[in-house]
Length: 90
Image (tube, rainbow, N blue to C red; front, side, top):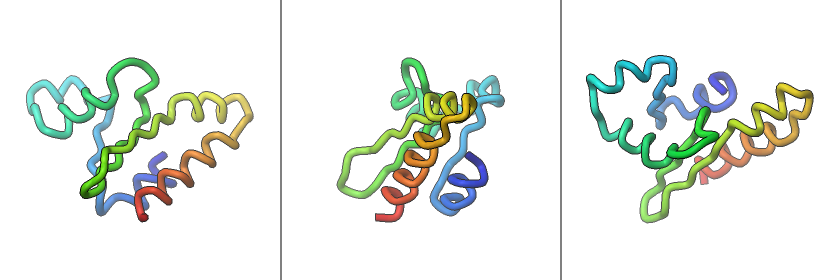
């Protein structure tokens, strides 16, 4: 995730580390509020939300593709990763 997506989108991205979520309470921000809105429910970690002018936000959930990858099925992860990168640079 860090190598394939975050490093490419770093100039445009805000990264919220789930391991540091206890600190989110002390610094409420628009980023945290957006994560809570778009990440509600299950299968939210990792999550990519792409905001583009004059369009609805697009949510990409990586939980299931990472689970498949862990079990030797990398196709869904590769497909979603390429889809995120393509959509982010359209």
